[in-house]
Length: 372
Image (cartoon, rainbow, N blue to C red; front, side, top):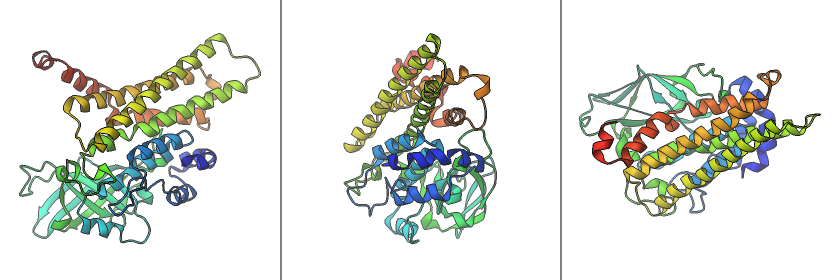
C-alpha cells in the first residue's frame, strides 16, 4: 500500500529532516491512504489489515523515509491501545470528526501522577512524544504512589487531549529528526477517576471482545515493542539501495573489495529479512490462537529483534565506512539513512545487552542462570 507514495516521500525526506517534522502533504497521504488506520477501533470492519500489515507497511515506507515508516508503525499502532479501553471512553476519543491520531510519551524524572478526590492529577515533563505535532490525543503512563490500588497496580494509564499540553521544541537529534519526538509539559491536568486505567488491565490478557483482531485481547506489549523492526529494516534496505545506485553511477568499475562489501551487506540484510518474517509470523500465530507468549518465547523474541537491529547496523556501517570522506555530508541520503538507523538502534526495545542476558538466562538451568 505505501508503494504508490515512495517517490514523493523520498523527495521530501531531506526537507523533513531539515524541518524536523513530516510535511502536511505526507500526513495527508498517510491519512487518506489508511496507513494510520491499519489497526483501529473496535468499530473497525473485519477487513482491517491488522498488525502484520502495519509493520510490513512501515518497512516499505522506511526505504524512502525512516520517519514516515516510524509514524506508521509506532504512532499508527497506538490506536490498538485506545481500542483496549472501555467502549464509552473509546467513543469519546473517536468523537472528534476526523480519525484521531494517538501519540505517547515516556515518563521523565519529574513526570507525576497523583490521585486526588476529584481524579488523577497529571503534571510534569514527559519525553520523546513521536508525532505529537500532528496528534489528537496523548497516551501517558506512570506509577501513582498514593493511588488506593498502588500495591497491586504498578502503573496507571491516562489519555489527554493534545490541545491541553505544551509541546516543547526539544527534538533536535542527529537521526529520526522528522518524527518530531518533542517533550511535552502537562500543566497539572486533572483526569476524572473513570478515565484512569490500571496499566496491566489495558496491556494484559483480556476477554475476547472482537473476533477479527487479536490485538484487542492478547497481551499487547510484545506487539507494540516489536513494531520497531519495520522502520529499522526498511531504513537499512533503503541505505543499501542507495549504495548500489551510487556504485552503478561511478565512472570507474567497482573494485573487488567494494563488491565483497556489497555482497556481505546484502547477505546480512537477507538474513535480517528472514528474521523479520519469523518475528512477524511468531506473533501473528500466537495472536491468532489467542495465546500468550511463554517467558522463553518472549526472551527469544527480544533476543531476535535485537539481533535483527545489530545486523541492520553492521550492514549499513560497512557501506558507510567505505563510501569516502567526500560523501559524508548532511544532504547525502545514504548518511541520512545511517543517522536514522543508529537512532532507532539506540531504542530500548532493541537494547542488545539486556535482551541477550535475558535470553541466555532463560535458556540455562536455574543454578547456572542465577550465577550470571
